[in-house]
Image (tube, rainbow, N blue to C red; front, top):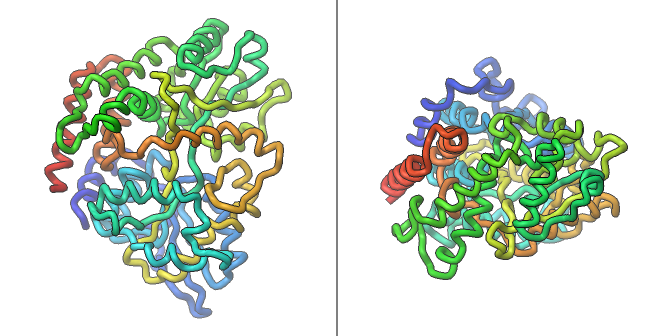
Length: 443
């Protein structure tokens, strides 16, 4: 198997409990066609909204295809996929993201979807590519170019949903404390201070797999002039992890942490824990994606009044959102059933799925021709507004350029920097060393 996934396996497999399902040698029929001609596709997802309900809907519409489904938490994805890759048991269709995606392309693990995107969409009334908001496909293709180096060879996955981030808050708390929705960073921090003094945890990111959101939001503000107007970049060394603007983003994260605005368990709290803190009235605000708000919307107590607002920029530049095409679906390059895998993938990303699947009620599709109920649309407005200024490139300050760098940044460097074990010089030096090694390995 390719060396990156083998190396990752050796460092991470000991820390994860693998989810039950595909990858186990207990089943000899991994991708099989039974006596009745029914094809079995193996599918791996880390997304609750692409879970068994979606698989069941697909099988109802496509009785000739059976789905052997495995769910694994996003925090365990790296080790799970590595284990599968090391034993040549990669699923036929699977979820991926940013740094994983570029590594998987380089390692030849993903099917090229260029021709498929020009074929009919699931509904058959336009091409698959035409169903998408163009910026979603472009955002994803920009990531692939990092792996291929070829602007004409960049279609190895498809986006799932228009992923944006916004702040979900309890308007009743705001009214109680006389707070207004912040439109500047200063107003946001003032609100956080009032909330903390009133006994609330001011804000959290949606779960522990998103601890890198804060520095990435800050870097987009602090580094934008150098990278987008002056043309500096990390590839030629005109930008480094010791650049002042990069350090500034990390320092802002530490200040947010040291001020006590984030929950003490921010590094470990999963989605359920964060949701419960909010519903119980302990947490006032969550920086969250729309696909993760359903549980809160359905279980909020009567004294809550839920609303959303777009997250302001720390340097008062037009605020761009994290996301875009951050959730990606891809097909195993060696699947025995490419036609069936494509049919499944077209369904998952189809207008039919978004219009009929109740679990996607609060998901912004990024597709043309999908409408929401008025009361749902009202809650989602801030998420849609968050995309107005575009998206932060998934690989910007390159902490997501590879699986190795992303894992080190999130699981080691961030928590140890925030708790004071590592100083900023050490963090920046470690990131630079990892990035230099990455560049050398990919020359």
